[in-house]
Amino acid sequence: HIDIMLSTLTSIHPDNNQIKQSTEALKKFSENIQSVEMLLYQMKNNQNGNNRQLAGVVLYKCIDKHWQKIPQDKQLLIKTLLIELYSKETTKLALKAIAHVIMKICKQTLLNKEWDTLLDIVFANPSQYNTEQQLLFELNLYIISELISSSMEYLKHKLNDINNILTV
Image 1 (tube, rainbow, N blue to C red):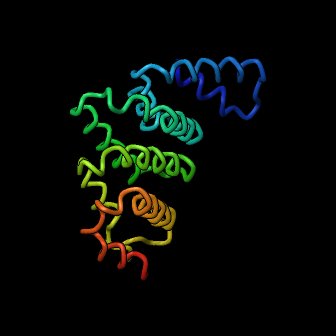
Image 2: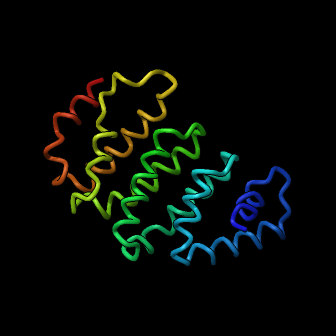
């Protein structure tokens, strides 16, 4: 059902009535906590990059409302999946959507030191990126800038890593 909504909204030949119905259905769907898992499933498994991007955008919009209600063991699985998706996504816009979801979750978790593994990825040695991974490097810089603006106290122990990345 959700894949049909996503496909309708990313269709090359849109029908205004179908778009309106799908938009309303997706908005109502995202109010349910179960939407988090279903959107993540679409982000991981949908063959259409535009649908993966849209699933990420919808998740970005609803994750704040649902995050604290998700049990910690599922939160860990979600964070692990997002890191996997972040490192493997090949569609630029879908990758950006994943980065935005990661930032939303970071703002809720980093101050409690709940997602240190993300920092290891974001602060990886910038010389490891080839030209094909330029977007990933740019998104890492985006995540770092967001972290600096919202969680500088937490990042004090990463100042050398920040300096290394910014002097590349």
